[in-house]
Image (cartoon, rainbow, N blue to C red):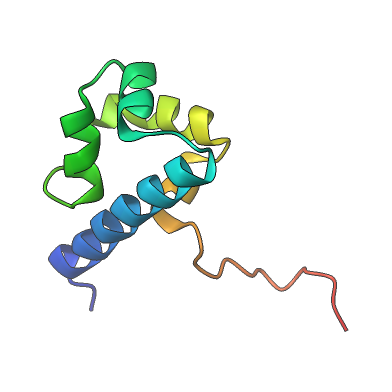
Length: 88
């Protein structure tokens, strides 16, 4: 049985961590990312601290900036192996 609250909290936690990691990977400050999105640096800080989440309308632009899919914003780093990877 799935627990929506636990699943959502996990995703929110992953989203926060992924935003921070992807932002740093691009060498952007919170203020620089905020400017690209039209929000305050404090908003980005709150996303990264899990105090708040980005507005759903910002997700496509966040994904575009980071060069990932919206799914990857939530689940980057998780195993998505579908069994079709080339390996020994």
